[in-house]
Image 1 (cartoon, one colour):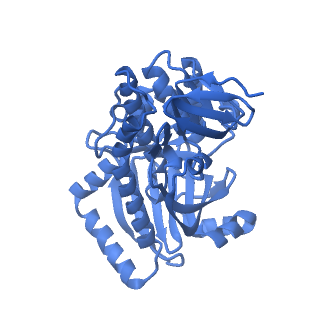
Image 2 (tube, one colour):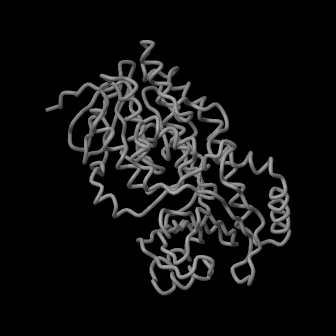
Image 3 (cartoon, one colour):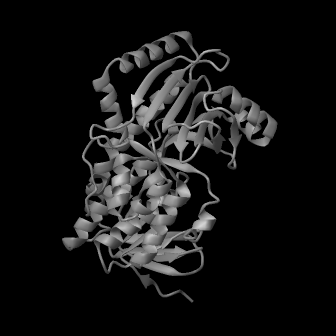
Length: 412
């Protein structure tokens, strides 16, 4: 017996920060919207359980304004660490001295920190609680098994057997998006042969809000400040080496100390460590009739510039604004002409950031003497040009391009 479809306006697949923030933005902008968010795990709304997840992300100033416009930043702020300055070095692992080639005052022209380090669990938990308060329907644990679209709408079949009908299905199910494949959207992608090792460190001396990035031949090694005397480690390493490091406690700690040095005093690993394969993935299309990609489902980039999460928030801000304006005008939110407005808004920025991170990773994960000389000259030149440094900080803060309203702190 075929299940009777449950009618919704929009279905979102994926309950991470992209899916949750998109659902919350739409529910707040369009009271009465029939929206369902489907995820394999129930949203983590218990702060005690969420505290067990020690991963953290850099939230650019524009994304912070968006979280404020959604009403969740005040809850997140007590555990958010502003990044106040940055130091960049370029050296080989065995160099006795790591010369500092570039320093930044990491504040924008109006004095706002260009980014905050925020625990992932605190951010996702705040979004989940706000969505619950807004009356958003969350279907979990469950998953979209299949879907098909026609002129009237899209029919979404869940693993549990439930069937949802909607005007639009949004896939926010990650860089290996199954729904992207089901929609027939191809990608441009390649592997860097690197893995990103992440964990949390506790150290004896205060970091004073400073982010440190060492460019080493195997890839960037970044220490990003967290509240208290703690830092988030993002360590790019050749995949075969990363796998050995993750598997061996003694080897991991020995190699970690070779890279950290003594600037922060005694260092202790206080979080679980994990390694994730690094590559570039960009969807050839972000939309199909009655279907849209957002976040990592649309693009996955190298973490060298710390912009992956912020690109996801830019997708959310643009898509929510396009959909809200279309629905208010009486348009069909799943119509391809509506969705193409979102695609045009996000395509150039996405391709540009993917190209920039790809070039940076290839340039700095390289030990050829001529390349080292060229990049060190470039870093030194930038360090002597305050106006150029301010521009870089402004771009990293998310202030460039045609910003959606929420990234300017405005409601849609």
